[in-house]
Length: 144
Image 1 (cartoon, one colour):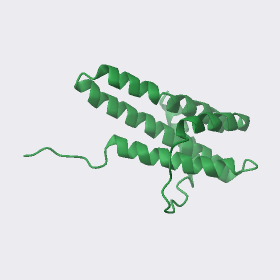
Image 2 (image 1 turned 45 degrees about the horizontal axis):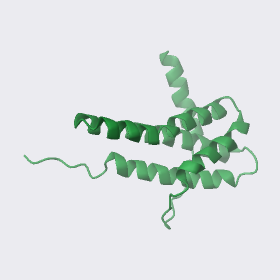
Image 3 (image 1 turned 180 degrees about the horizontal axis):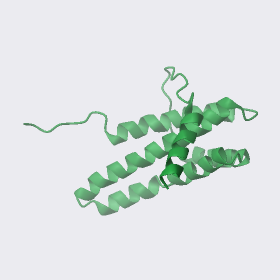
């Protein structure tokens, strides 16, 4: 049998996640007050940042199998901001500290300034993200 090639590799997923975050950040910046959509947008960004962090580990594991240790370490350092941003935004969502959100989004924008969104309509993938994040946090707390 030949090699199986996964066309939906970690890099492609990470690219989609980054574009989704940029779209959500654009919507969030336009919000004047904290409402249900702002909560959903922030929770969506948190969940997506965690997905990006998982793809970074997936990529680095593949490189480390080939003994590309330095390349993997540099890549992890380049994407380390995702874990920090997810933690800060999750704290803002969970503890209703919405004053932390603008600074975190501004810091993320530095890393995402070169991302170009396609012209197609993405819809609103963040709908229901707040409830999903709170559910995941409750399950995680129950495991402890």
